[in-house]
Image 1 (spheres, rainbow, N blue to C red):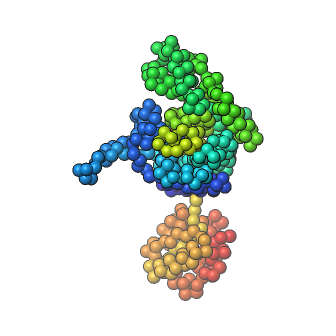
Image 2: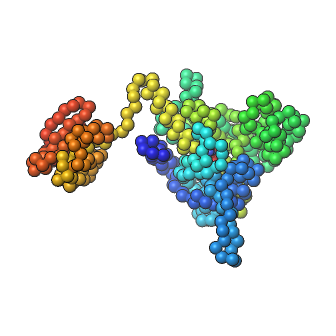
Image 3: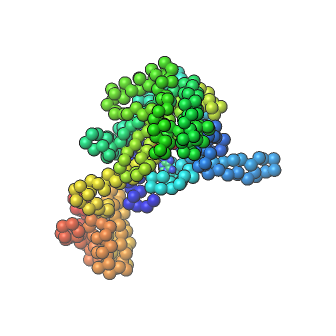
Length: 433
Ligand code: HAM
């Protein structure tokens, strides 16, 4: 990743940090390496991530008494956050923990547009003992409303009837509690028995190993069968149904639009109750899931920790950037304007090496006043300085022997062609205007 694109990454990250701070989230930084077992237990042995996509190796033992350890480049960060929650006994505070992270994740997937082996996630998790309110449907709705706000502030429109393909869309589901899910999976398994032989080989395998995965299959020919399978909503117990109803009521109150998608089960095993994905069709091709998340009320216990219900999400930052770039391109195409690269306020051109030091000193003064400055080189001929300046700066400040002696520079503004003599003491004001 290179400039100027990295400026867009920085803007996105800055906006995310600002929005998260307003919702009282603090940053957590977890290691890129974790013990393989963490993901096997947390994300699930049968998931694609753990069974096929992790970068895992045996770290050599340093001493004969030590056993080699199996390490993995993190494929996601929820398991790492919950590990940190357990390790640092954050539950003992009794407080709700609201943590966000920004960083690289690694999955050995087949790379294509929007799908990479090293990709970046911006994510957040809300977790705490049940007495801290971590189980409340309010937390689910708050997270979703925060995401809607973040996308609004980044300038990604909400999908509407008028611009159906341009905006974001929230898909929402409940996958039930840890008791609802086994009942549903059993029903799914039974319903799949008579039909699975007509399905693609991948789905035949999933029907045996992890029937929920059949639901997010994209195989065209299998869609009709999948649409006829039992729906999770019919297997939710009273408490899960009430939770889902409350989440939806809070979203309605906050005017966050959503579509209930009963097939949204997500590719990680830790989810309970609320699951969600935001999709956007612009710029992403087939990889249209911009972000995903959900509740994981049993994850801490699965990892040997205390009961600590939680909910969180991770945005695919690469996909967010692709979306923003596509939006900027279509806006430019609609207005006919050619997007320009950002330029510095001025380029200081010393006329000979004798003015190099003065040029640097002047740059220092202007930079200290907040201006962005590039400094040329006294060995350049004037024509070369002008060409270099025109490429990177809005104005050129020429500095020869006379200018240094009189503390007055010659300034030319490229957009207007205006040229004038300006005292060093007035330079900052002139360049800013
Ligand atoms: P996930 O759905 O596996 O969930 O990933 C979240 C997002 O990361 C996806 O929606 C996608 O935008 C992005 N992503 C995933 N894989 C790739 C890839 N190979 N290349 C580019 N982008 C990718 C999780 O990771 C969960 N930890 C989310 C979560 C947090 N659930 C609860 N808390």
